[in-house]
Image 1 (tube, rainbow, N blue to C red):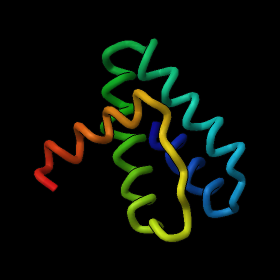
Image 2: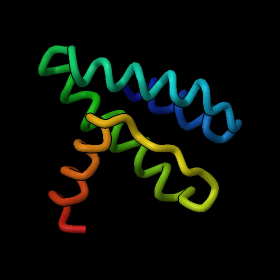
Image 3: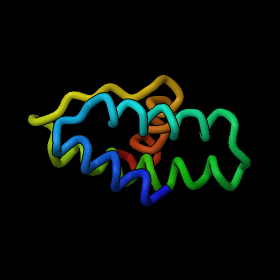
Image 4: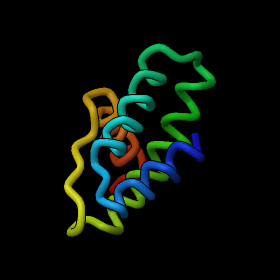
Length: 82
């Protein structure tokens, strides 16, 4: 999942938003249908890495997350007490 996160960030920097959405769709699919281990990797690896990147580039990109990734992101933010 860390490789997918890095690819997604590279695509965002290159403003290739179709590929960014493709990567988000892959992560969303794994979160919905993957094993518990895969779901954990998506949330703790991909989602954390990508959303930290998005926070650092907040003004440059406005990329909406798919529904389930968004819910997991909100859980992460709330669990950190932010």
